[in-house]
Amino acid sequence: MTALGLKLLASVFMLIDHIGYCFYGPMILRIIGRLAFPIYVFQMTEGYRRTSNRLRYAVRLAIFGLISQVPFSLMIEGVPMQWNLNVMFTLLIGYLAIWLLETLKHRAGLLALGIGIVLGVQIFFNRTTARRGSCLRLLSTICTPAADSRNPKGSFAAIGIRARSC
Image: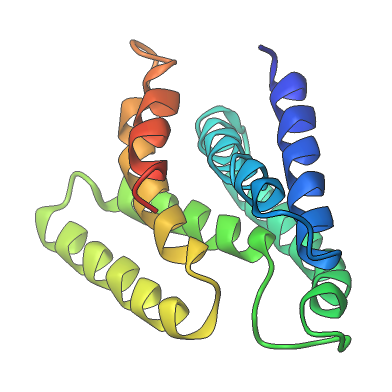
């Protein structure tokens, strides 16, 4: 399946989830909707691997996170803004974690510091955002090493294994 096909499929799954959430639909709608998140994580790790400008990619994630925060807050809490961040910020944090660990991977002392920073951010966001945040950071750090030029499908397999336990 192409990247566009995966994005469209994930969008349909997410729409089904939101319909189930907003209209108190049957739980099966929420379960189907949960299939979107691993696809988005896969797309984010592929984006990290393929982008020519990592900073610009991170800025785009942040901009889309800001644009979608008000509608997200209205849907979840009924108010224009709240602290519970939307999934775009979750993806941004995972992206930044990958970038940090990738940058420090050949420096043992700094890598330990980077892992500490990623874990600290994870603990902070576990207390302030939805549970999907910790799943993403674990997924993205597990998936990115698997997605190399020798094994381009490895990241999707790693996502499938980890997503079931989230």
